[in-house]
Length: 361
Ligand code: ATP
Image 1 (spheres, rainbow, N blue to C red):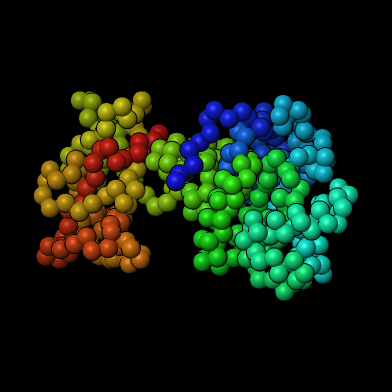
Image 2 (cartoon, rainbow, N blue to C red):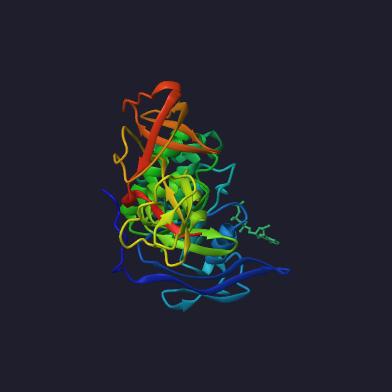
């Protein structure tokens, strides 16, 4: 089940012109963003693009230099973290190391002066929710594995009963298998609790698997926000396209007859209806899985020939490298999709216009 964007839900968090300046450097440079109630929004972007700074402002650890952050329409700019109905889960988890799992989870409840019996009942409930055995209640957190500590930190976050949970790369230190498991559990927990999640990560896979919407940051700005399908299939520019996976790209220019030409191709490039660039030049981007081998001219709308010189097994798929002229093209096909290059490894490769992304040059 894919989680559809909750377009009808009310915005819970609203950012208007949010900026954070350190000295004369804008780490976050004017962000406008509405996050809806119950949404799972992931912010991705290269190192230094301002993700953590943005999250710290949302959580109240940092005040914006200018702009407004509101929650349910109420201005939050200078409200301290503990006075907000939000909770931040750090990458380091920030658990109390010498305390038990139970003590850690109950901490927020203790602060709220909930009586011990009710605290314990709630802690056990939260343990079940994050899929830890109740027997872990009395265990020292130092005796828990990385993945288990992750779950304890999550349970403690839910003990605050926040409306919005912020996550700062919570899975980045875990091994691949555990990460894949927890990605799914995060998503399930999100669905189960109906809370709003704002999550930052370097991992595109994490973002793709979990999010209702992904915001892509570059140099302090959100350059695109959309569903995973939109971001992957209709990136606004080459930066976003390349950030979300490997690409083949062609610079195209319009000639006097209105045809689009790329120097690498013998024939004009076919552009899908509605995707014609406004300017006289543009870039056509084709994902490796949208390129294919062709057996004759006309087999794909756009064709070139080259030499197949490498292939890599990627598990269920195979990636092929084809060299033509000075460029190397990537194709990714399901394992077992037969390829028989001609003499000297000669192959024809191509793509259909409908599978290409056209962005500004
Ligand atoms: P990463 O993915 O590496 O964690 P990020 O996208 O989270 O990066 P930030 O940590 O938000 O990026 O940092 C954005 C920019 O702001 C960086 O260039 C960083 O050096 C700068 N910066 C962050 N905090 C401060 C600070 N307290 N004082 C000065 N500069 C800062």
